[in-house]
Image (cartoon, rainbow, N blue to C red; front, side, top):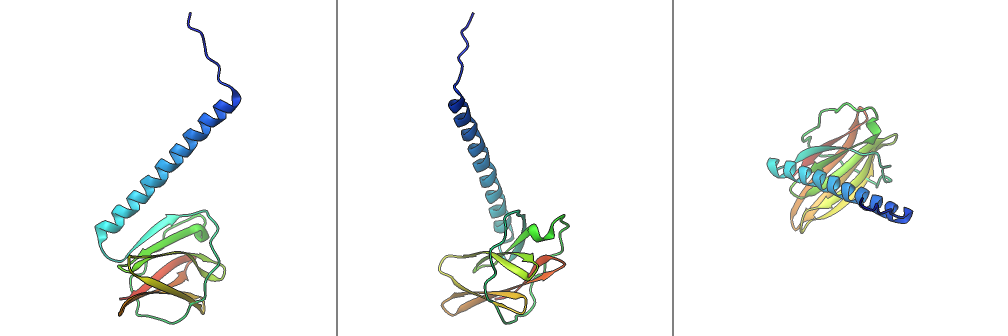
Length: 153
C-alpha cells in the first residue's frame, strides 16, 4: 500500500499563495492583451470601458474647451461611480471616472515622445498632449455619472 505524504501547514499556504498569484497574473495579462487588441483594431481614438472598484485618485486642476469629439454612449452599471473609461488617441490615453465633484483623473499614458499637462476648470478636466508643434487636447466631463470625452487633434 502506498504511503501518503502529509504536507505541513506553511507548505499548504505557500502552495495556495503561488496558485492565487499565478491565476491573478494570468487574468491580468489576458485583460491587458484584449484591450491592446481592441486599440490596435481601431487605429484611432476610441473609448474603452473598464469596470474598476479601486478608489479614484484626487482630481488635478483643469480648464478650457475644445471642439466636440466622440462621445461615449452610457453603459449601464450598478455603481456608475465605479466605472472607469479610457480614451485613446495617437498622442496617448486618458483614464477617468466620475465622482460627486465631476470627473476624476485615473491615468494618463502618453505615447512615445509625447508630454502632457492637465488642468481642472468648472467641473471639467483637460489633458493636453504635446510633441514638438503637434498638440492633442482631450476634455473630460461627466454625463449621467459616466465620463465623456471630447478631443481635438
